[in-house]
Length: 127
Image (tube, rainbow, N blue to C red; front, side, top):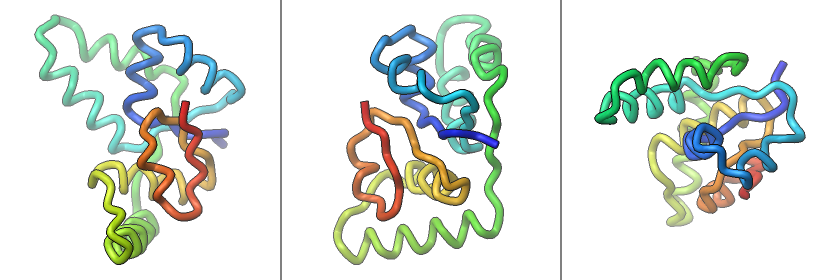
């Protein structure tokens, strides 16, 4: 059971030792990330010009639960996207999936991206 999920920017900030991210995540014992966040992190690792970046990412994820999407995640995503489009409040595509996973897990999402506040019912903890 997880207490919160983390956005990609939060994990990157944690890996960089940013104190605001550490403070935001500090109250939570069990954290999770969506498979989409994992994919974004690994893509960044492949794009990095530093050797062993993938190893560094995987090391940082020890103890973090990976939340995989399923049919319910897709249904939540579709409803969110439809609602946001109806109100002209679109957010980046991957962030919609990240929000859907957090909603499905019924946990807050720790992020520094303000646009997550546009997602109905999502408890976005923006630092």
